[in-house]
Length: 406
Image 1: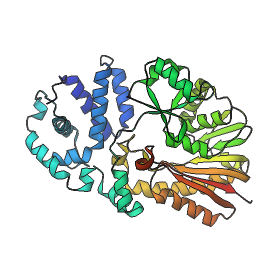
Image 2: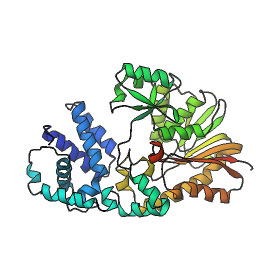
Image 3: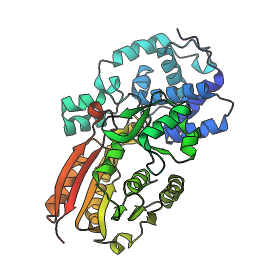
Image 4: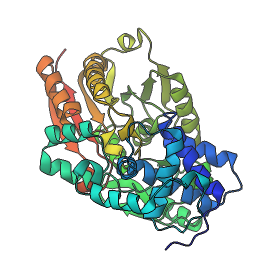
């Protein structure tokens, strides 16, 4: 029995975070960040308890809901209390009975949870449609491998900002601040934290010595093979994690144009670029004629396209409950359009990387096959995958292509 005294405010915190995630459809990480800013009385241990249990309940949402004899897709706000009690009972916490739990039968819940382990969709806690897609796309054996790690907590990974330090000196600097890290095999500038800590309060972060970035994401940037003096376009830049690393590898020499359809993301990239000392980045909002104006001008092109994000479910567990078959259909169309339209940015002899953080062939190699069939002036040079069970990284796909003719 876990005898940790669970103050009501901690349980309320978990309930609030889950309500915002499942009823208000907000992202768990954003909700928790706001919650902690509003409750500064919580220490590191309290925040850790709330965050870890919130994420665990999100991961196992279906299993817990069905054990509580609720439809996981239709849980009401007041019923979230039952799921929290069920989860804490599973973790063997000795908790004071709140009035919200008077009608909740713990013994029955535990029996139901054990029975739920007989079926894959409830054992690993995923929607039926996603299980069907996974089997159809990857086959039973490969899908089972992916599911074996889907509910594990992803390690916190960072990348050394090469403008300020290499990975060895960064590791030493962080250790001096009480942050122990390990190097990552296969990702030359990456470190992972030995234990989860608030690294954003370190002097190393304030000084711009590192960025949080999964090793798989770092490998995509390296795959593009950029050099000093090239004209490089990051066409789906977002808040700019990959742009910042591209600037590193270009040694601030050459032109790096970062594009996105949302100005607030580009504004965030500008802030990060200043902290990183990345001076060769130019941000541009994608508007009606943006792509046309830079047609056939880039030596390198990065297309990190919108996707289902199924390769990052360890890191973003709430995504599996917000995805839908319709979204998958729509995002596949969007990917094809971006690949077809944005490829015109590349000059003859230039190279581009098409990348996703998905594990589904329909978003990955099938998209590239379809594009090449329609565009014989491009050729495939190489494909890579970073599937989590094999690499430990988030699941990414990347294809390197070259424009060989007009």
